[in-house]
Amino acid sequence: MIWVALSGLVLLLIGVPVAFSLGLAGLVGVLLADIPLSIVTTRLFTGVDSFVFLAVPFYILAAEIMSQGGITTRLIAIASNATRKMRGGTAYANIGTSVLFAGISGSAVADAAALGRVFMQEMPKEGYSRPYAAAVTVASSIIGPIIPPSGLAILIGAVTGVSIIDLFLAGVGPGILLGSACAAIVFFDAVRGRLPRPRVADHHGPRWRMLVEGVAVATLPLIIVGGMVMGAYTATEGGGIAVAYAIFLSVVVFRKMDMAGLWQAFMRAARTSATIYLLVAAATILSYALNLLGISGFVREAALIFQDQPLFFLLALSVLMLILGTFLDIGAAILIFMPLVMPAVITLGIDPLQASMIVMVTLAIGLVTPPVGVVLFVIMRVGSIGMIPLLRALLPFLIAQLVAVVILCLVPEISTWLPQTLNP
Image 1: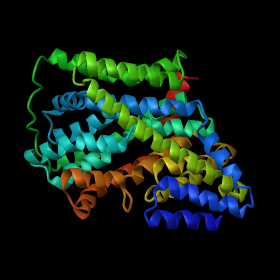
Image 2: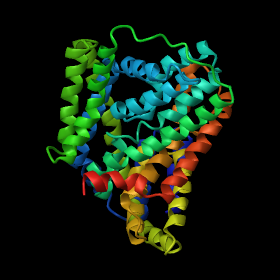
Image 3: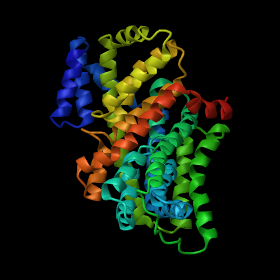
């Protein structure tokens, strides 16, 4: 197992793409286990041969269409008008827009890229420092993969067998908790007079139109999750409905997308989906090789250390995922480690939904921490800001979010109450 881990780590460090690093490391494991190489091709196809994985392209496509269809500007207008009389209101609007946008994009990178362009221009004009504006955008962006519909939840459901409906519902509480953690930092800064009052212009046009448009946008995640809870359709079918609704809003209602734009959205979604499927296939090879080499037994023995101490197991799991999230792709980490961790979770009597949310949140925090924090580099490019000033301004938000992780470990109901209530 050590040689497999070392080979994968070396490949990542020298710049080999994540999917190829995982696949080649898995190939090393297969060779060490003295298994015929023909099994590799079989595993590559069986890894993605799942009805659940069919949902991934639909949600990616829906997010692409909604992101380009004038949705972002409407969400920003709604959040800005709701907070325009508060000190630090634009920072609150930044966080609120991230929460709303999370129900559409499901991606921290998409959140940072789309919202960063707007808030990194407007917030400095109002008196915010550029590092602070960037820090708020970065910190709130990790809400994107948590609040449903979440691509990470689909991956976890596919590799562990946990209900995707329950995972979607479980993400609401942790997502709101992360947003509240960010808002708490803004509140303390505002109380100490460090933040200006907003100078955001009122929404142009009737208020009722802004309200109607906001309701139309917010309806998308409600349609997806609500229909699944009522048993009207599966997660995959819900993805297809999301695409149809996104096209209707962007092309017919808002009229911000033509056929050329729609074609570009399809092409981008196809490329992103292909990347994810390649990652899934490669991670399947690596997971298979690690199981052949006995990692499942190793994890079970490690879990015995925490027998009758589930809280310490969750805290240790959080630390492990925080470390992994700093240098490993979040999807790859889920695909490799969740099938290994889940049996230990069940053995210790921990609710799989709570453990899944802790893994998702801690890995998402890894997206904004060096050395491989993808969201950091997106904002550095969008906002033309250096890493050190950004990290200095980001530190209080990271501390608040780590406190939120501890709260998730201590209070399982944050993750489990909504699924137990709506989907018993």
